[in-house]
Image (tube, rainbow, N blue to C red; front, side, top):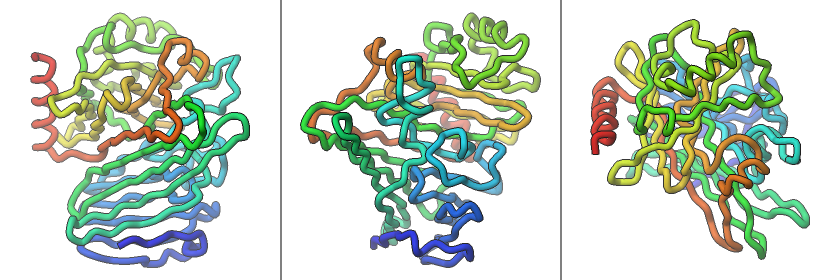
Length: 357
């Protein structure tokens, strides 16, 4: 069953849209005017902004808030990335990515994060005990670009893991360049342990030592980056006092399992974990972002990405821009959310085994 979503369905008073199985789905509008869809299942809830970037604004499972801490209590209606900062999942790209360089004309992380989606819908599947929210955004600029982006987020009735699919269709008659990054922002925890399917050395785990224009480094920051460049394992346990203020960014060469998936998690002291799974054949670069400041506390365990985050021109020079032929569709699938203690231990054991192959 498919329900088309319209702006008129969202009001200041939260209203029930539908119920089935353990799902309860409501519509509401924040005081800022942004429309939101709350999807509650047996394990927790997510809040999706169906018409603003298809962002997942909040995710809470098993009584734990997964979303980073930020200065924003609610989303803001804007196209500017830093004016609406702190969602759980933000889709970045497509014509630009990362901090623009001197020769770039794209905004920070491109046009997609807060894009006004043309359509949105909700799909209910009682047989699979699942629900899916999706939407489309067409980006057309004369003499430049014309694509259709489709984003879908699926959740089953008793799960704390989200299945996200993003596709981009090139509507031009000529090839298009494409950049994408899945900006999943978990909340870091003191004593959290980072486990991921990569070799833990400076060749496979590379820290960004260039400083973008939006970052104002504090004393000792550059020295900390130099230490991380030589010994990246320093950051594998998130201890208070490590200089992640304002942010530290890594590029990681991930190892995939026999099914083509790479895995990354933050193990909490209670044994549960925050988790990301992606496919390196779809997103060859894994970006890690850590930001621990008095106002923002965020952990990007693994951002599936088609390139680095140095801006279009710099990534183009490195040969790391995807090309989508006319009429073709590029696609990526990402799984993320919360693991139980047993799922966490099984995943850590699997990651360790991958590095021994």
